Figure 1 (cartoon, rainbow, N blue to C red):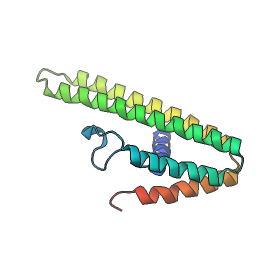
Figure 2 (figure 1 turned 135 degrees about the vertical axis):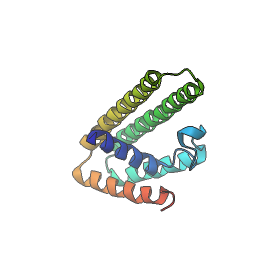
Figure 3 (figure 1 turned 90 degrees about the horizontal axis):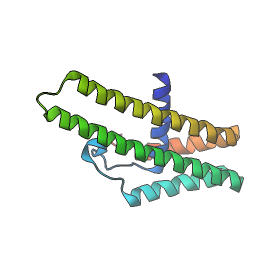
Length: 154
């Protein structure tokens, strides 16, 4: 459970730095797609942070690639979660639905989230391994600062 929380926090930190992926309040249930201009702006912000932080251009390019992989994984996860939620809505409308049918969907949803979290965690350690301790510290501080600008309602 601790690993899931750690990975979830990491994914949220990177996503918030890249930008809010969906309009506030839309989340999985609203089916809103990420706003291209917001996502582009956030991604450019992350790219600038990496470029500023990572002095070696080759490492910076690799770090950008890892961030792109994380974003792609999160986008895929959001789509999968929407599909699982849709199945739950449909099942909820079925008067004859059994608890076992709900449990199966919830198990699949949780397994999907764990798979995503594990992949993102691996990508996090891949990025960390290629950076120096100082680069990682500056990058983390920059992401925290950027993330604080994207928090809604705080």
